[in-house]
Amino acid sequence: KEDGELRLCTDYRELNAISATNAYPMLLIKDLLAEVAKGNIFSKLDLWDTYFRVCIREGDEFKTAFNTPLDQFEYLVMPFGLHGAPGVFMNLINEVLYKHLFKRVLVCLDNILLYSLDKSSHVQL
Image (cartoon, rainbow, N blue to C red; front, side):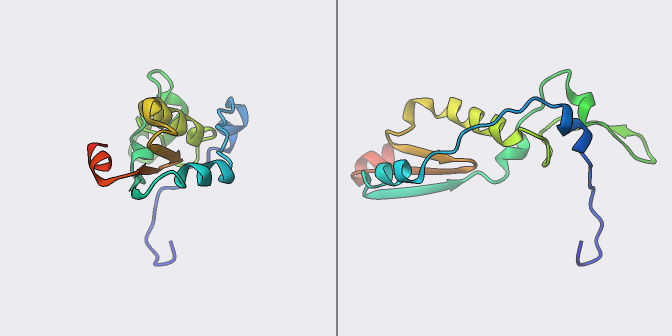
């Protein structure tokens, strides 16, 4: 780091080269703006740390293994840098919020926008 502090850096290039791509299409801005125009009251949720709480499929942990002088370690949750991880995260969020998408909720990666016409229906969200 710039301040001289050390951090773990894992090279996933070889794993990413053989991984299947799980791409998730981004929504068009015009579609998002058309939905946002339907609301009068808005709330934004930023789930910035949720991405790192997505568990790696059981049995696939060995693929993220790395060695240190102390021992070999494996990630149990999604580390930053794995190929297809954002698509997996978007699928998870869309499965959880499926009933509300494009009715009162918009999702873009780790940002969730809640919108309503009036305060009483917004509070029920």
